Image (cartoon, rainbow, N blue to C red; front, top):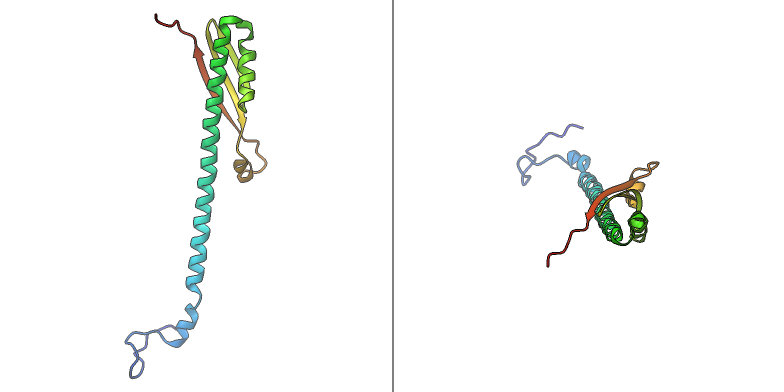
Length: 143
């Protein structure tokens, strides 16, 4: 359809579109609103996924730190049980201890936890997991 602007007759606005053009543009605002709604919902979903991953990462870091501290405190009593103590502490905090090394009163641990369900939903078929490392050692208290 040819949508040229016409001057119209008496009382018509100068440069107003003809009736045929107005009918052709009907519904375009609805389409624009629908596109913006899709864009905003997609952005909101991305923010929620990112927030859940960051929260899970912080939780895993705390669990790994606690495991390292528990292992280091166990070196005073029984160094052979330091890794077992670290593993049980990690498990109690929702993590799986994947590596533990004891050197005197120092303990290095690595732990893993499953990724949030939102990541698994976003990337189907992938087994997502988060990893964290921590180190702790006992020092002599000053008098």
